[in-house]
Image (cartoon, rainbow, N blue to C red; front, top):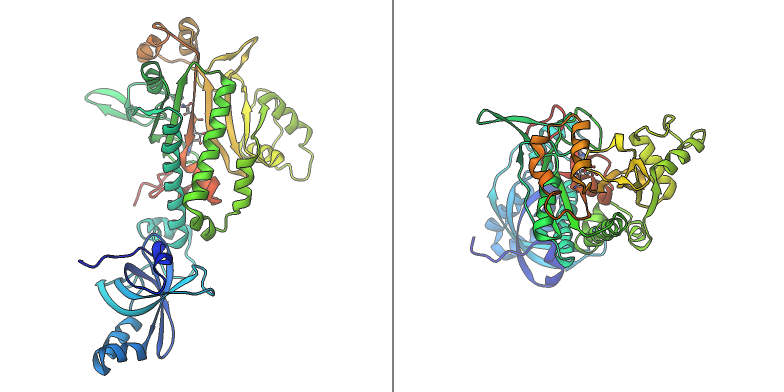
Length: 448
Ligand code: 4AD
């Protein structure tokens, strides 16, 4: 293919010019002398129009008719090289149209299973490899990409370096209940639940560090917020207090939202996501509420009409209806801080003067999108950490390297982990997490 191809997203730069686009036929319509092709190339969708008289004029009666007839008979998802002149077109959503002057078929397609009619979720999930070609899925993947890009940019601008944590691990990072275990040459090994413990070693070696990779949780929950394999951005930084850590997390989440507004505005349009609302989340300070105040609020409002949650006591964990109510109540991303130690992982530092509570925060996205970040200040004292490891029924030998970090120059440090797909779901405004990752892994779903 020697021709220089133009992407659809760049078409506005070529008004009045003849361009060639490598694309697929997403849909087709038209009657008699005219054919409309919905073209897509992964960057955007737009319409090409073929007009029979133009083909006859350009190629002669026989060849022109043959070309035009071939266009009229194109099947959905046929791959084509389309040549045409770019025109502005106010009536179309994209704002531009292609006046087709030539078309070459590159790859035929027959009986494409996903037709423009409605399909059930199971059917679409079974055809995920093809479903990804739809307009909405393209937009979500573009948002995911913008978030990843903005994440690297933010960490780079804030003095972090990327420090890759292993995927295979000899110990549990979060808890022992949802580990995927595998055999490692006769020894048990686990798929990483979070790179955090290794990142802490990184922070003591290199200062501000982050990782970004897949993590695994054998959670048997079938909800719209849970995957068994998802991508986590963990960050860890020495010499920082919990409050400073919250400031950093807030700046990070705002940078990610801004990144999507800057880099994928067309995707937000396709998804009809309210960009002004996203701008508001950037403009206003996030809310901060303590776990205990949140419980009290939930108790005070449990008889309200919109209070679609069960009664909670101090010490109980939140379910997603509680999280949704809290985030709706504040209408902004909300940090819930200082949870009971019993609800959280072993490595968190207790609140001074209140050892039942730990210096941690979950960031709840607004509009009911759930928790997007979990973070905390880490226990720095060797003996306290050892005791916590034992109390949690863990084997200190498995955490020898982690305990060592408290022996040789232990310093206050904090960190957090953001679930990429939760963030994508929130920014894209899509209800189910399964659409936020190319090939979702969930309870009873490992194919395709
Ligand atoms: O709150 P979590 O469990 O925190 C940790 O793993 C810490 N070690 C992170 C750290 O401090 N470095 O998980 C962090 C985030 C959650 O806030 C959520 O966004 C996401 O990971 N997450 C999930 N996303 C999709 N499916 C699941 N099953 C998830 N579990 C957690």
